Amino acid sequence: MQEKKHNLDLDVQYPDTRLEADITPAMIERWVQASLLGPAELAIRFVDAEEGQSLNKEYRGKDYATNVLTFAYNEGAEIADDEPTQADIVLCTDVLQREADEQKKTVEEHVAHLVVHGVLHAQGFDHENDEEAEEMEQLERDIMEALGYPDPYAEYDA
Image 1 (cartoon, rainbow, N blue to C red):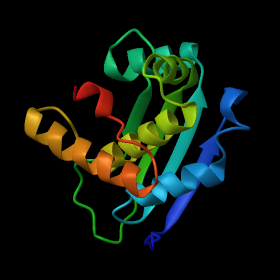
Image 2: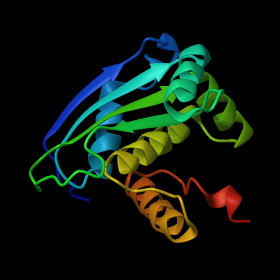
Image 3: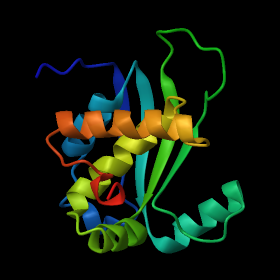
Image 4: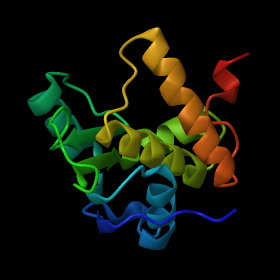
């Protein structure tokens, strides 16, 4: 499969260093590129539960750490086709490791899915209603399959 490369300015940050050796910037760049519909300027940041909870509380009013937060800076704005998507995507190591274990997935599979999910959110995809959720989940399935990973929603479809 020939993957189309979009212009990408990617900053990967590991203030929580637990996954730094296993989830490399090269892996993340591959997952991001597979999810992009156009150029992007993204930061992907791995944080602990304390920082994840603080961000979720401050920006979403929810006082708990969640697996992924996407801060899309040009969401809803009229942008030209060549204008890059700009976003910060925050992954909470504590939550994603627990979820991977509970869902019987590898941490790599789960992080790949969360990166794909976050990048799609950054580009305006959402799952606020059933129709949007179905469209977004199918796109995630297709991207994950193209990347060689199993269906991230398979266990939920049973």
